[in-house]
Length: 388
Length: 181
Image (cartoon, rainbow over all chains, first blue to last red; front, side):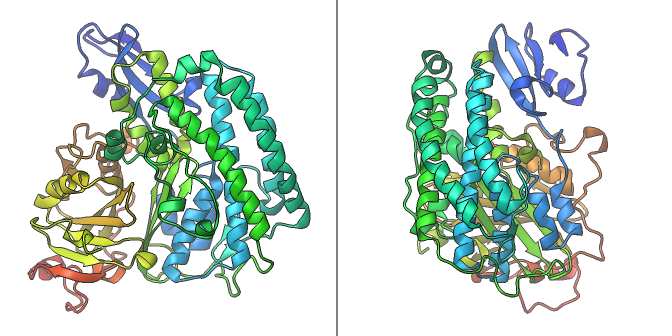
């Protein structure tokens, strides 16, 4: 639908009509998506334009809504893990962790030390893969075609590594209540050891050829400035809030697993713009490599699944708990309520992309349309994670 | 913690409790009457807390709507809860304080049918507008549990005498009216 908003009849669906009723005279209402290439999937954004400037914007979501929270009511805890691999295809292992972590916290299950390290290693590898996916796709949005070829080359190496313990390449269902499904074997550890220097050699190249590129700099510097107060009102987390100078990382601030034993820096940027968020993610990849390396050095031998780990029919004890982990896009939270029955009473999923996108309506006001696309991409959106 | 428990000083509360963070993932739990919600949100924002999410839970006594807050600089999680009655589930919107609440409230309406008065754009969010009246997470009367049986009570710091939702030794088998009496 592309019509003059002051025309009497506005063609379009419920959301277009709802949006158009507040339109000012002479403005143009435009749908970005749900099939627009820069929306990576099925995000739709309604924008009201005055020439090239955005007067108002409203994301329309739900096209990939699968009602994972309802599915929790008809599954046992163990049966629900595959759902978690499908909420966010970018960083599926973090969602595995958020859910099993909530169950373990509620049931008081201790995870064997080796499993904790295996969890951190696979989660951080998956985080690098997630950031690489964002990096390639974001540059594609901004008109740079080649970087995604390099990003996918690196990402393939990670997926090859993760394939051996997890049996999957994208929608991982690798964690179990009380540990992980399979240990990392010798070949896998060797492949990870080889990957670390490889990736370290790539990052300076990316900085030199891409991050410092003048065209990229002009597209993202000073674009989409998010003040810390904006982040706070919308609950932005992850690289979005860290790019606004807020040094908040669940791995550091609500520590879980063995993260307190690991030496890593929480990168932040005071730029607050798309550049700041870009820089934070690029530095996080280097930090994840450090985390993986120290995990490989510290990892003890032993079991990767607790003895007497819950069977598929196991019932979560009665009670409630909230557990959060740091995903590629920010804080993933699971609020789990159990009545002690076969299935869970309520699972509430907190998705970081959802909160991060919700600030877009306010942040995009008054920007150029082309900048609005650059802001959307800088949020690193994974649509199925928003819609759940 | 000494500071945290004074967070809502001067506001009209129903229930205030300290929780074991390591076990429940929550540090402070407050049940507030609907009329206090906006004031509590303002207090939290002024103190630097950000909104994590809003979710409802269908219990015997009504819909328990939970607002989770965390802080960028301090550890801990504050849970604010309000009860919306089954027959007329309505609460005031906090979207005027926390802009991010707009979407969370619309989602709660989609799933549980709780109405948030004052939400600036109260249309379906995740569900198709044509089937947005199905409220998929509502439970039938048989499967509803009492709030006190499944929710964390914590270590009570303050309980309004008329508030019995979380009181563990309250007589079992009462309905919503009896619980409130």
